[in-house]
Length: 76
Image (cartoon, rainbow, N blue to C red; front, side, top):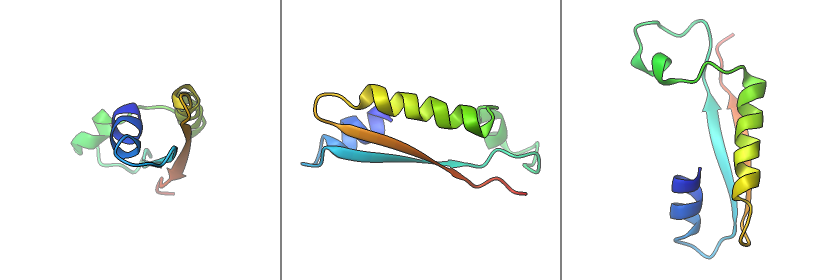
């Protein structure tokens, strides 16, 4: 979030507000052979939301206002 949103996108513009969008794809239907499955944190959705909200709050300083949003894309 810091590297991509704050230090890159916002630093290269006059904008002081940012939204960090996370697609959350973790689900039991994910193919065990897919390498991305092992690279994905095994957090419950609520824990992911709290993690990214906390990170956004920490980065909301120096005139920046950062928010995060988790898009639940889990297969049902």
